[in-house]
Amino acid sequence: MSPPPGTHRLLRIGTRASALATTQAGLIADALGSRGIEVELVELLSEGDRTPGNLAAIGGAGVFVGTLRTALLAGD
Image 1 (cartoon, helix red, strand yellow):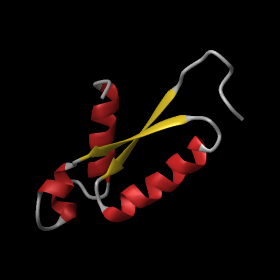
Image 2 (cartoon, helix red, strand yellow; image 1 turned 60 degrees about the vertical axis):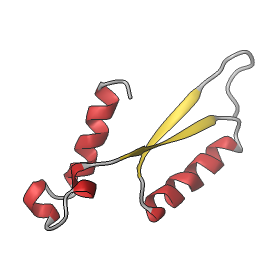
Image 3 (cartoon, one colour; image 1 turned 45 degrees about the horizontal axis):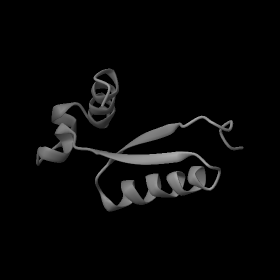
C-alpha cells in the first residue's frame, strides 16, 4: 500500500551500526521501499558499543533501547 498521492513521508529506522543490525534493518527498509515508503536508516552508537567489557555492568540489553529512546525524544 502506497502513501496517498501528494504526500511525502519518510520513515527513519534506528539501528546499531553492526553488520548484522544494518543488514536486518536494510531488509525491512527494502520491503517498505518496495511499497513506496521512503526509508532512511539512522545508525546509533550506544554506551554498550563504546564500552568494552561486561554489558550487564552498564545496564544489559536495554542500553541500546535507552539510546534509541533518547534519540527519539530529542527528535533525532
